[in-house]
Image (cartoon, rainbow, N blue to C red; front, side, top):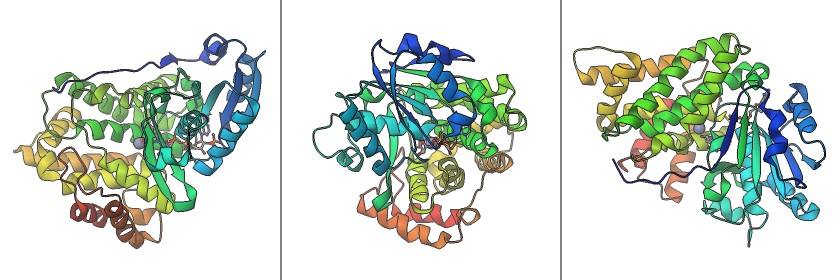
Length: 386
Ligand code: NZQ
Ligand code: ZN
């Protein structure tokens, strides 16, 4: 196991009716920016609960943070905070609102042009405005990590950044929010969390036994939960299992002490930037094809995954590894995911030249846990994904 340090200061409040505790979490007298997305919080009762819990505070609303949040939109909130002397931000929404708030929090006191935070994928260690979150969509894990992904609409760039000053001070995770989610977003949450685990787990045997078994436990729980929560989003126990899996998949725990991959996400972000495909759907398309192209370097772990998560038995480990990829694709399809770019756009052919040129420009020519994902392999992955 590699040396590691784990820091995660986010206070997590999990369960029904926890929104009422907001008052005990935000400093008295704080002037709050209430940041939200396109308005789902007005339909599902979350806004009402938040407003009631914040009685007595001065609250300035900021809505309109779009999925795959735009730098251009977020800068309007930055200006509002500066003009109104706001001291605390409350993000009420899914990963996009929370990520957007992380950028806003970093940008307000940033010396220089805040676009640099995204372009140079800066590490933000200080000078951020404190914020908390009320999660309305289990998927990204953003509620308990310090990462953020923001799109610069003008140049169609979707880039991640982060840093220890960008952990939420608290996050309220109430599984009853799953009831109001469109099926598409439940599908997205399941598969985003699944692939988060795979990015940290599906590398090569690293003798990190506990990390492996926690990862396998999350994967198995997601597989068991998927049909239940899709069939009945009001099933509180199923929704709770989904929500906790999503948080645990990306709160830092399972990546400690091991080398990780994250190339599926890097490629997937380009598909979102180019075509607007939902984040999780890009992962369902790219993930299995990446495992196929990098089969030789991932096959030992694929075989472990096949045996422990899918209980596959076959004559050889190579067969188990290959079958494990097929099971993964079948699971994604059963969950309602597309597994090719052509299912999402008529313009699939653009993907290869666009993404290969992007990676070349950024000198992303050695991704993955072995730095063996070069431009040639990238092209092969995309070719299989068309
Ligand atoms: O905007 P509103 O009206 O709230 O509607 C949203 C949005 O249209 C809707 N929604 C959310 N909660 C709802 C609801 N509708 C009904 N009832 C509710 N309870 O769902 C739609 C999608 O929301 P969004 O926040 O975009 O989805 P998600 O949580 O999947 O976030 C995706 C973003 O997170 C980034 C992705 O790249 C993408 O930009 N990620 C962030 C990560 C992180 N910070 O650690 C890691 C991930 O890998 C990911 O990259
Ligand atoms: Zn993701």
